[in-house]
Amino acid sequence: MIEYSPELIKRLNDFKKHTFFEILDLVDRVFIIVDYNENVIIGKRGFLPEEKERGLVLVFNSQMKFQWDDEALLATLVFGGAREKCYIPINSIAAVFSPELRVQLTVPVLKSINFEEPSDSLKKDISEKDKISKIINLSDFRKKK
Image 1 (cartoon, rainbow, N blue to C red):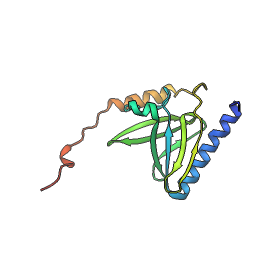
Image 2: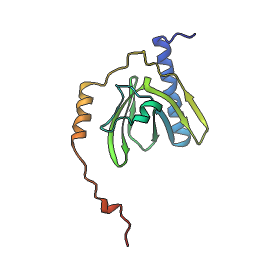
Image 3: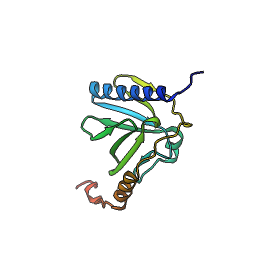
Image 4: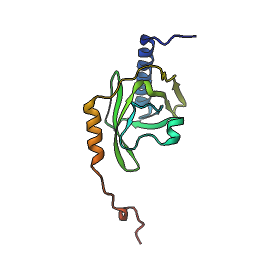
């Protein structure tokens, strides 16, 4: 049985990042599966019950603004018209894949590893954004006669 040392985990996370950006460069769209963890922040929305069991699939393209650093993937994503600030620890990314290329990298999510907690300023920024409600005019979505 292989031992998941901090060095091995770092190299696996680097491999995820490399795969992510290679796919993005080739087909301009990449999918990830994020396993539920209490340190993953998906804005106010959070994880739905079935996503806590199966994981959450997220899609990225090259036009999106996001940041991937050594600790986490930071992005503002849209769910049902609502913009949500997301903090995804790299250790919580279970898969990076592309349906177009039929390529997939899956890795174990090591729940016993201590995940980095988001900074207090990031938590505050996310909670402040959640307090601002956005009103959507439903008449924009109705069929016009």
